[in-house]
Amino acid sequence: MPLSSLIDTRVLRRHRLALACVLGIVALAFLETMNALLAPLNAPTNEDWRRASTQVRRGFRPGDLIVAAPAWADPLLRHHLGDLIPLPVAGRMDAARYARIWEISQRGQGSPEVEGGTPTETSRHGGLTVRLYERKPARVLFDFVAEWSQATVTRDLGGGHVNFCNSMGDRFQCPDVPGSPIKPELLEIDTSPRFVLGIPMVGSAATVVEYDRVPLGRDLVVGVGLHNVWLRKAGKGIVTVRVVVAGREVGRLQAGSMTGWTLRKLDTSFLAGQKATVRFEVTTDDPRARTLGLAAEARQ
Figure 1 (cartoon, rainbow, N blue to C red):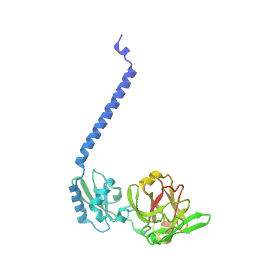
Figure 2 (figure 1 turned 180 degrees about the horizontal axis):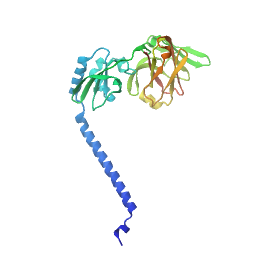
Figure 3 (figure 1 turned 135 degrees about the horizontal axis):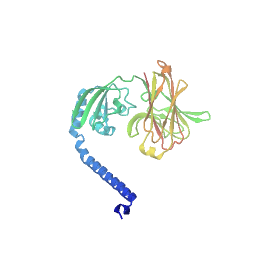
Figure 4 (figure 1 turned 135 degrees about the vertical axis):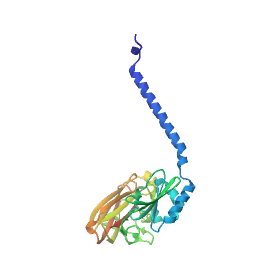
């Protein structure tokens, strides 16, 4: 009897497949181990950071932006150059207003914040590359966070009942929720600092933030997100921001536990060159563990 007739070919195929899987896992483990061993050898040193920082300081101008790539290197960037990154810049809504951006990158990474820019300087410092990007910046006509004190804040309780929140110099205090002020602050949103108007969600009332006579351009750029990684894990509610310009809804944004920092450009070209009332109506289906960060700019 031939030997081949005694062998189950299906068993052979299964054994070959199992062997291939085992070899694949071993190869992957080997590659990951080598990467873990070699990665520290390619990491930038303190001396690399010192030389890169010196290069940036030499050419830095007031109003320049400095960014790290990849983004997880931002704490190291602030350690070496934090004196050139004031809080409003560290917590910027986006980078559109900056004409000159210094990028300190490693491992071949690039920052999305330099989009639209042209590199005009490049230098290498060990494991770090410094590039200066230049571009035409967005023209900001009105910064809603910087001008927060011009707002009127109310809580719409429904049924025609509205509570006006009092301006206390550094915050708005609403009489029905005295422990939950609305104020400009630096909040953690999507693991990054954001300088925003912090709006705690309390009860079923809608929080309304309204600005009169806002100079408008072609766009109204709005950013929203939820504060605090632990609160994002604890709560499930969705916060909705309805944006109304001169009585006309121009857009809605939503912030949830997994949405991060959301930016939207809303069309206001129908009122470009004019002044109008801009209103943000903030509601949620479940206020538990929800604090919204809101930022906006009117741009030409």
